[in-house]
Length: 373
Image (cartoon, rainbow, N blue to C red; front, side):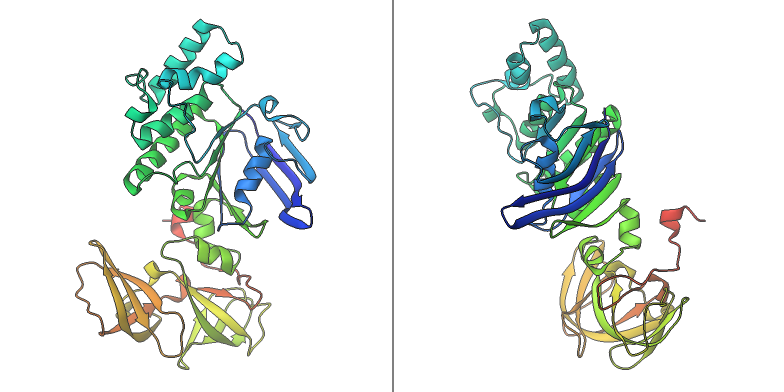
């Protein structure tokens, strides 16, 4: 397997810049997920690594070797696309072996590799079936197997689960994660689904408008987003944002004026915040608590109640606040549209963002991230 290094990688089509100065280190055996909204450049970046697009500026290294000028076949990468791209007239074994046959690999070696990979992917009982006789998940496993038999140093996945239904997406997510644990291979995975990113990645790369917004382990991005874009993108449902005003600020805390005029102190580094400055308070739906436990509480009217069994998602209308605030509550709690509902905030669970979108660093250490008791 191999590491992947990107240094000042830029891709332009004429005057249109797709990626801008991407610098990234991917360790040998690491599972890295590129995530971001449509048009952010994540698939283009993957194609640059694969050699399917030419790099405009910068240097790409695989295993410490510069590969900018190498064609895809010489980069020792294997790519799994969104579409299965299986040959309908070939059975599973023939589809998996096709690339090796083109490379004139010995027939006995082809048979050995196909057999080994089919067993890993639980396809060994399906080798004589045609693609039309397979489920969506089985077809995707065949596409992965076709890549695995070539034994690439780096696996590239371009939104491979997008064509599957919700149940199969969950199943394939688990299978790809187990495959990574078994192979200990370097894998780079592109998705727009932040749930896939959170559950599969060793490291997440959040892209926005062709630039890296933040890189880090999933829990680090969840608990300590560097900017409002990452805070809003990571987490489902997304973080709530409330307009507030700074009353006092220091390196240890910022006292803010909430909508409605009440005050609350948030333990963040406010050394770059000025009194009177407009800020944005960020609160995740799952971090609201009962008002009796809260440092601050507000009340709003329930506009929509989504009952999901183990929990409810409540959408509250607050006077002077747009859009509605979303919070997560106990699924056994009785709620009704039109009801007044109290939502409590814990100051150590809140985030503050300056007008430029950057976060005021939090002082609170999350036990889940640092392993504290």
